[in-house]
Length: 469
Image (cartoon, rainbow, N blue to C red; front, side, top):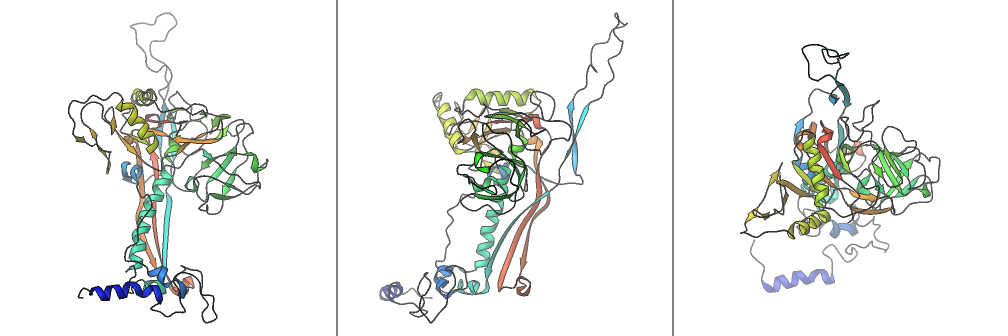
């Protein structure tokens, strides 16, 4: 098609200012209030008033953060024929010691016979789904002049991004959730980040002074402004609570659940995964039925640097402690995950000691992700002690229970040799064009993935919490 002349271009560009190519009784976006047409909600794909809304522009711009760095950094493995595995949590008592040629005093010649303590960890796959759809009318309208083209292909592309983003947010979902605004009834409350909870999560709630409330289950979707509806009223008015704690996930297990232990010191009480009475209910994923995850022992407990709900700034000593603990437990840190707020604070800490002996861009990769460019000489900005740093916008923020506020993002120091995203079924795409089944002239699509985050060694994972923004 030949390029239009200047006069033709001006005529076409001004045409929409004075009249509509579909007639003067259909305006652009607002519902027609006359008597000739009855239109639906603007943008619903069926009303005549929404034709321009549905077909405007050849390009739909994305203004959302679709980064999935943490998910990309975790190794993906095939699920395998297993519903769980075993973890050795104890070496045994006095089973190893020197042996003398003859018994000395009352000592036995051979060490005491003992066995290892083996814990059973059960893990079953979870399903994450993402849906999209388009009406038959909107599919036709999108192919008109000025439309977006293949609207189904466009929605499919966006749904794929949303699907991976959902998995990433579930893998980084917080274990302590601050309720910035809370309702006065016993069936709903409001949270600052709608991605913190999912339908099917079992939650408890608590303030810095009140006892732990009884369990509730999230029963409906979380609205964009963070309204959470749940079943169960508990023993105390919900208006008294300021923090909620997922103890069972409806979706994927979060890394925050993995990097935890029994009785973590938080503001207002101890994190208690073994019993709710007298403490804060912690995540029960990866917790054996009879043994709690105790800090500082050979049980399944990660290294957590907490500060009883009191905020403090990130420091190199805190990161060094995490690295030292992981190495002392037989692991080797492979990646440091943090929010962008902590990344810039860490960069300022390292910049103050920078030695410039020449400079060139240097990047380190883990999984399919690369660090931000740094310098190869002196102190590396994008790595710390040779460990890649990956900032992720979805990293959970600290909940400072001492004053009921939301702090900065946590810092995770992880040995990914023992972390994996086990995939039972790779992402599947299903399309439905059965109009009678859905009772609508609508084409629907579904993307779903079946899998679960698994950790085979908890004492080689570490976290720094209670940090300032």
